[in-house]
Length: 150
Image 1 (tube, rainbow, N blue to C red):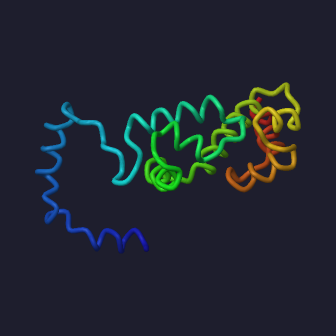
Image 2: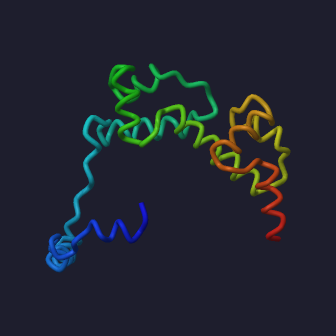
């Protein structure tokens, strides 16, 4: 949909835009924490699962293990996790591993194959394929762009 078409569909006067802005200014100081998405994990469970994943992202983690951390059944966990974090647990775990791999690659000094093993990828090829798929560039491309800046 074009930008012009989107603007045609929105009648700002009918939305009460001036009143909304005024209410937003008044209410900004009293903003409450956004509740978890309907059907998602509770804030406490989400925090425990996030912390657990950050501490154990280089290990093989089973859904049942994460469900226990969250205090829900494995079947309920998968759907609730996706509603809370916007992606399935496996994808979240891959992102954690890729984040660490990218950090290590940017810092330099460690071979790509070693970084792959440190971040729980089976080998350099697995890291390269996964990074290309999810981040749009390979570890070598990341290192080359880093060295081009210096």
